Image 1 (cartoon, rainbow, N blue to C red):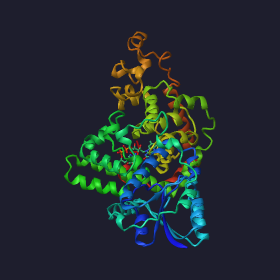
Image 2 (cartoon, rainbow, N blue to C red; image 1 turned 45 degrees about the horizontal axis):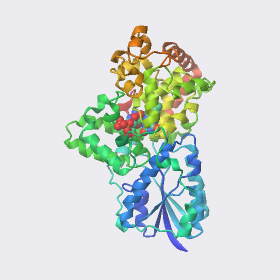
Image 3 (cartoon, helix red, strand yellow; image 1 turned 90 degrees about the vertical axis):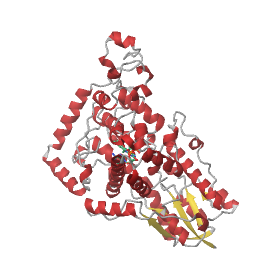
Image 4 (cartoon, rainbow, N blue to C red; image 1 turned 45 degrees about the vertical axis):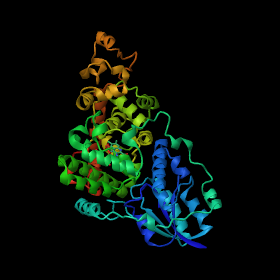
Length: 501
Ligand SMILES: Cc1cc2nc3c(=O)[nH]c(=O)nc-3n(C[C@H](O)[C@H](O)[C@H](O)COP(=O)(O)OP(=O)(O)OC[C@H]3O[C@@H](n4cnc5c(N)ncnc54)[C@H](O)[C@@H]3O)c2cc1C
């Protein structure tokens, strides 16, 4: 039997700074390049077809990059374990090279575990490599920060594609591997999903292009504009999805920013961006150390406080019928583009978990499916913080009307998504109920007619949430548990303390 190695691509959809590919290329054996659309992963409630679309487009770019060198990447719709079983019937697989699933969800870790077990049983070496900026052993935050910086400055793993020998499968084996077609909807994304094309196009070259436009021009007002609902769409980096799918590594981004900063006319903006990149790695590291935050409240004392699920209320929220224009506009934007800036994500999480008092665990899959950049390590961390499930960080009770005045003072974002508000003056956009009946008629925006009434009174719901959380976290047992958690969790690096929104 021919001896081969396999590089299994997961959320590292690039060819540059790719440790598994780098080491496989050095092994001087034919390499099978493989990505598997795992049917079980595709059925998970957090998976949306926009994720399938982003993946497929990214893979197609890798295939185009490999093509001139005669190299092949297979992308079957099959479980990794089944693929390995099938290939092991025809080849002697010596090694499987892959990136560690360090900040992955439980079902993904199980998928890896099952494939790894098969390899162990069949004398195949399972060769895993850390993701840039993530570590197995972390003693404390200063230790993590020092390791992170050193890792970011390390030389990227570069592969000379001419020196790679990829395996071309005989037609019969390729056909068996590819027996199941890739879901059609991945080819164009969901029907109502229109990516804001130039800012969310998948693939490594688009990641590099976005980063270039950012360091050259878009970053000039980053620190202030990224908070504003409308401006953030252009003024933020917008590379979160590319990082989530691994179109670009955190190390590549960091080195690009560092180099650009040396000659930039707005270096402080780029420093703030690099800080956020570090915060991203910090969240992932925290999740890798405490992966149960995917399904358990970090602080058990809040277990059972949001027992009743109200589907009607949640549906009103997901259909953008809350009666709060900033909230509704954010929901529509998320559904349509897959993207929101940080503040709007926090606003939505706060609305659902604090104002509607719904359990974040039941709401999470809807959010995850719609965020193109869904990254469990960051997502669950913020869902738990915003909703007040830690005790360590305060909940973020955002008043949607007041937030509109702060982050959409001219109603630009609201008008972008809600046509009823086109003629409403800036100051009233976030609070249509404040208009007189005459104004409502005059501006063609009439709550109860072409726009819903407010579904809650935010003062009352905020009051309830604050009182309830205060009551729970004042109990001696809660104080004890919060202290325990404080010691268990990695503390935020000093620069970020208290800066989670
Ligand atoms: C409830 C909630 C859920 C979230 N879920 C996700 C998620 O699934 N995936 C995700 O990538 N981010 C998530 N975030 C964090 C943050 O909102 C996004 O990273 C950011 O909005 C992405 O936009 P950008 O690429 O334009 O960011 P930029 O402002 O350009 O920042 C640069 C990079 O730094 C990272 N980053 C930026 N802000 C933060 C932050 N506050 N914390 C951690 N990392 C940050 C991102 O990787 C981002 O690409 C979530 C935030 C909240 C409140």
